[in-house]
Image (cartoon, rainbow, N blue to C red; front, side, top):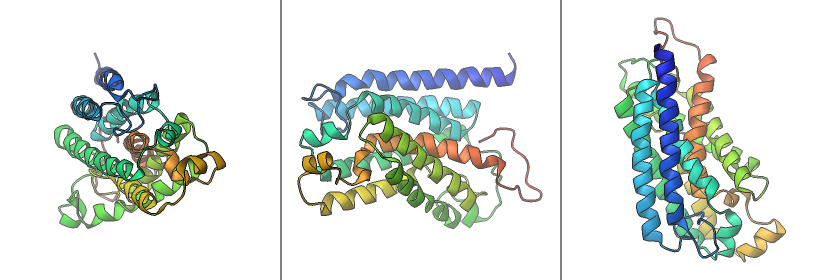
Length: 279
């Protein structure tokens, strides 16, 4: 089998495996409202939900590393995000969150946990799959370091990503929430590559998730009034229509798509090799 065909089969198998492990985790999120809880706190048995999530996420990260070695690390991140998206699509919406009398402060804490998971998965995939070959080393610490000055500049793209999420979350449906999160991730990935074209995007996917967490936390601690009333009359802030689970899936998938899309628009510096593995 030629290398491209083998690569396609490995990536496809990894995506299916990632989707399956998260599909098996869905029953652990069962809530009193008769649907899978949109958050861990909304699940009838939160401890079971946390355990199932950690197992599924760890396995999916392993599958992503295999896909990353066959293709590249950015593809690996998409594999993880696709799995999380299965759990997102099978879980409840913001309506279930609000009418289930959830505490927004707990949801904000969960968003922080998702930020940590996304960052850890990104670091693991890049470590196991290796760096992107079309982002060659410059031997300058500020550029090459995954947390160097150049990387930190690229993380500012997370702000733009969350703005896109806020604008795109037009309805209360799950598909709309996941789509808005993915669009936000796409914007973060594309802008992040423009801001730091010579830096490995090891933690770029965590940037929109971190900004989302900060914004969600601010709303959770400052929002007044009844959430159910705000949901019905449309005064509930748009960002709250997206739960952390949706944002995590969108950040992983969207950032991978946006970063890869911008490959054709980022000019290679003179003397830099052209990649064999495309992001």
